[in-house]
Length: 498
Image (tube, rainbow, N blue to C red; front, top):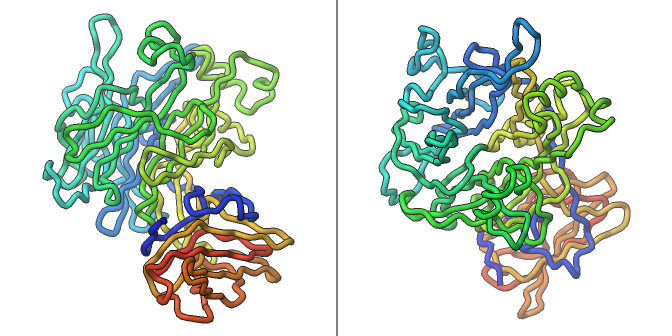
């Protein structure tokens, strides 16, 4: 039997769903684009400003990101060239998640001035080769071995004598989240060249760290053998997890298990703890799609001229495009993951359909609705203008709270049935949306006694609607129950008892 206690539960995965009895279909939610919140147009920024991640700190928000240019235009030939600038780590700040600004930190000198928002550079660390993709978290482990409150992971590439480099994922620590110092190498077993994420998981009582690597497309070749004999683009980009009890000793990396979903190349993981239910992890991995040759469609696709210029730098810079998937997990190992894109590149505008679309900032912020009196929403942030030689722009997008998936009924009544579970609490809250004619009826059945609790007709649109029953909810608490919902012209997103 599944014990949900007072957790908010969802219908994103099928842990609680009796799939044989349920006729309500699973429907994917959608993000809505809002305003531009930042133009990365400072001299230390550019089209490579990406891998943003959000850290709530004492009621406010910080957003860490890569600050750099990826390509520059040659003033003599007009051709695009690889930029000679290095990645720098910078931070934005916000009190409400809507208005963002660059704090003047005075930590790193750039072109003779410390009047900037820079946190780290390879020079400040004394590194020979570039740094990359910084992700910070607040360590909420009540028994943490490493005392600093703030911790972060960052990729480090160490040059080798053969002209190649060794990949390292380093752990950094800080007392204030601004002044960082190297602590130790967390692992060497990965690629690490996209945003790696880490957190203390209260539900599992351990640290989890997620990063990218490659695996063999040939089951007869091990990953290491394939890396020696295959070109990088013949390997499959994947996501892996390691875990630790003390943030010092870590397990061997394991590929995430998508429980039968298609094995597709994934570039970033986008994994974070869901703020409205900390037992649930959500991720927005970027799916990497590289067609093998230029076709007529590339000539018709927006951004043709820039795409051709990037192709001269490397074919995949012009041929590759990306979009975003959704996934969720309760243990960090097994994941429900969509095969269909959750976030598409969108209507062609000359700046999208590039290798770099759908790079969602890691983290979800609850923000006020633009409609007076309406419930708050969840905000995410997505950069644009990747690989274009112009400043990246950061846009806010929103989605309904818990709204990544719903169970849906159209004009004909459908049924949602759960597996047996037990709960703790005295009342039930339901996240639902109906039409004027639509409805939801909830029935809770005691599996042993056969007693039932029936709701009134529920309709409206609320993320936390109190469900009124014909009896006391607390009389069913702690018992094995099954819940049924009869639905018509309705979507149900989540529920909880409290």
